[in-house]
Image (cartoon, helix red, strand yellow):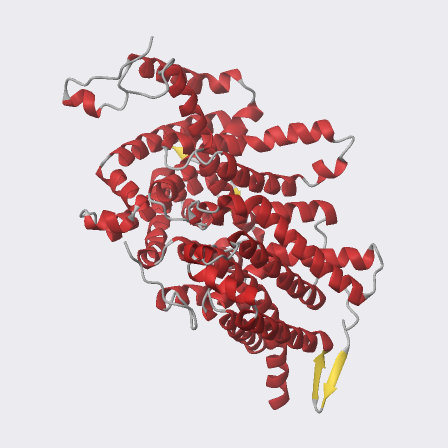
Length: 291
Length: 349
């Protein structure tokens, strides 16, 4: 009994750290540019497919493929931002958000046409292997997802707290005009936020692809990270981690004890509850509207 | 000759929808074309245009909500689905068409009000998320409540009879749908230019200012949601009758995106925009099929991935229109018309 709940919790935390990585992308872009990127799930999917192509087509070893995936995803994020988002600065939020929806459809369609819609297995050196800790037997992928996710979060939290660029990004999120007057390059901040969002999403995508499989509609899994971002607060990096882990844990336990497909539904009901009760999330900043 | 404007000399003229002889003549011509369409074109083209007519009704509703009132909705497919499934359930009980249609519109309307309530507190992005969450909940219920909706097995809709006349051919459906489209356009036009429509636009442009000027923002937002979802419910009901069997895949998330593409491509915040956009997006697959057919020998993967290609093209249309031409096709048309009307001057006096 005790070990069963621990097992479920570890599985939940593993899914949760993937959610957290994708949620981090939502939060970063929201913080820096004030828009919600509905193509975040697609960035995750494309990242996973890039890794898949590098491993199967180019036969690269894991570490090389992994690092190259990060680089290529970052480039993709930068290109999307530069081509589509950059020129929308100053346009209504509605237009920019709908553009990300359009990009999402476009990326899904292109990926499907290039790789086909059939499910594909994705292999990493730790797929299918388990790790025994005392009475607990856990999948290595779960362990790496949790460790990797938390490590990335610590890196980014330190980046925002201590590095000059990170502090500049926080300033830009606070007030674009003032930040610009202080000499911060807003265009660079926008680009950087999309690069980081695409990179963390691709890490999440590789772990998710390992736990499950690849198909173009896996991007809807990425959309389910939205509740995580909302729960933590759309503008809170630490909130994304806690929100992601919490949602993963709830899903894991609900799936284990209640069974069925309720875990697809639960996040969306949670979203409505959060939006009604506390739209700025647990750790987000409360917005005050002025005329 | 340059026109210097229309001068109204009575209140009747002031509130008339069609003010000039030219407008009436064009409208008459449009009426003749609409009536003659099934005689001029083959069965297949009537079938295609029927889907476009249904899309016009739903797009009108979304444009009232998003284009006029400025409330983003990613849940339009859910309202369509609710309307369609309500129709399937009630029609199999043997209720008459008009009653089923009204019940479907009403069910959607009530759900629209329910999702409208969060809109009183939420704005922009948060409302988009709430409507998306609502969509996924509805989609889940439809896929899993097998007793009621048939789930993946689908649900049959009873054949349509209007006043004892069976509507069993594409042509008969066409005339029925044209009637509904004309009525919907008429209602939407009058709504948009009345007190309610002006309140919608005021809320879209700046809600706090609207409130200060005495507009009951909460009330009009709810009205907007109610009207929009009733339109979608009606369109869903007609869709159900037309296709005869419903499955959850008919109402995927991409359908919501498709409707957003319609109102953006046509032109946000205008009745004409919704009509043009719905026609454009619904007929686009035919154009695409033609192109992929022509390219089939050199790019076979294009025609075998037709559904994916369609999704991608809708995405591309949204992106390109928003970046290059945010006023949509209707905006382009109006610009051309204005420069023609006022030639050689640049602006209307």
